[in-house]
Length: 365
Image (cartoon, rainbow, N blue to C red; front, side, top):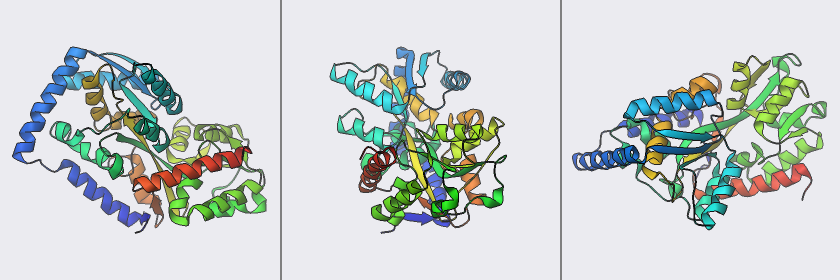
């Protein structure tokens, strides 16, 4: 079984997923979903409150625009609190608080599989019939729900994708000097001239889906020999680029586009051979104080709320044809292979390597 698909394959998958997400339900399912949706909406109206611990978007203006649009869409007057808490922090906190018998937030995110698996293992997220309940009112819900690996489907919704490539400071280096393949950065000429994120090991961890764990680790070691500048988190990579710490950095479309939108001297491209994808998710923890409001907001956020988020802060899923990311891939990615975990075994493979890579780059092995 292939662990990756070509862009053409991804495009076909995109089209199929999108068509399935908007396909009409059968009459019995339609009636049941309409009833369930009404119950959720009425429950949300009675709860009247929403507590969100989602790291991205992180601007108060975006939060307000989203919640205003959400309230208007469903005729609500929700009292809300949005804390842009990093998912590693929010997940740890929820697990700790749940062990003491309470859960404070209604919606969590935007975490990768590493954070999600901790919630799964502690039974703090359980499967929910998103498409059955919201399919009529939010017909695009099938795409973010269907994106999740089969073993975890229903436990979370896909929010946006971190897709990895290379960003560079246009004041420090010409476009034609940037390598087309990641392995070219192992050349001695890049000694101390590349910025790398050591928090999680992306994109090397995801590259293991195509190269195998041993070869992905070997490539990371070759890059390490060139003494790259190490940063904790992809946003820190782009900040260092703008500051002129090095001419190039391993980054994501999302973070580079945000820097470009802010007027920073950066450009971004995918490598010619692979596009590593790290899906980020939204989830509703078991025991949330306002479960109906939480599920209604989560379903709305990943569908009708997504364009608002993308307009304000840049985001998007590669399987959502409306997104700038999907359009960028279609126009510029050529024949690069999309690399994304397709099942739980691959998720565990990526997460295991991510831990090893983090220790390798930080010298903690």
